[in-house]
Image (cartoon, rainbow, N blue to C red; front, side, top):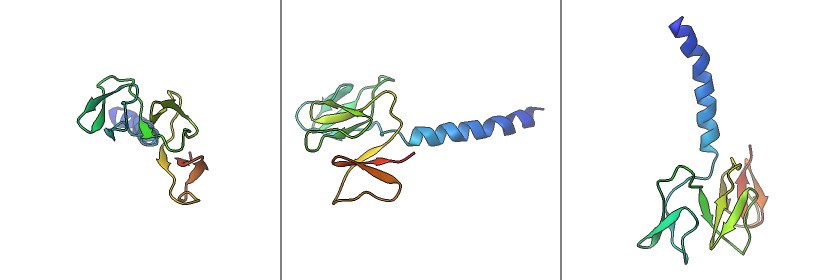
Length: 109
């Protein structure tokens, strides 16, 4: 019975892990002016605080933020309900599996 429970639960954990990977990574960012909400200055970087509600961020390009993100100084922070990752767009198109949102490419679901 114990093995059966693990077999039934294991796929659920795999699904949760895949969903988490699609979110904007919470990691240090190069400092451009002040740091975004939930980050603190450390040398030339903005470092995420240890708070569990710190959101992933990306440097703001051209004054706007991609779908699912909001402005925080010179950065775009992922909205709490956002489960997509964004990157800065290079050229006029996005890679396969991503769609254009202003000056960014956002990962499709």
